Image (cartoon, rainbow, N blue to C red; front, side, top):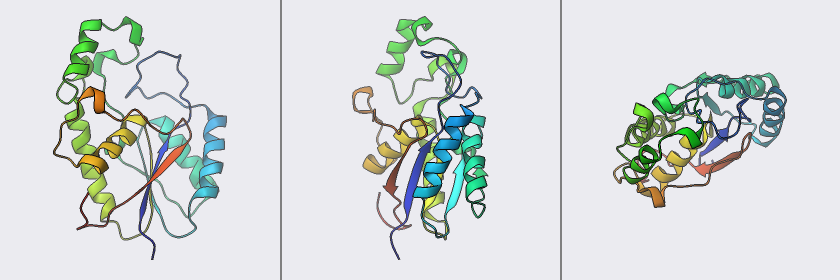
Length: 194
């Protein structure tokens, strides 16, 4: 049996203007782009049993349902721990319009600062870590998360450093899957070190 993998799939392009902070805003995604992403993903996924979890936001749910339409054996399940970071009152505002001192405070205290009064990265890392632990205990092989760039970055950090280290802004992973794309990482079995 091959080692399990975690497929970190990013939703398709959301229907929002460029430069807008939209973390938890429940925005729709481009339907045609979601269908195209689902077709590519359906062809890439293994034929054997896999588990599909998705962020409850509609841009992720749309891709999950499109995938299920192509692969009816996949039953996507909403998973709130796969939500993007909550940017509080920054949500829906242009990044250029957010107070520079607040942005600097967030960058200097990345782990503890709650941007816009929302969610600190520490809390997001904890919930993603718990979801990762649950995914490691699943009885089937590969696991698919249809989620957001922030969650993919959290997984990259956690797999590289574990849950105990607080990241600094300059070392936080910048890479994330493109809209409608994915990355695949090993999913360590329970008992294996991360």
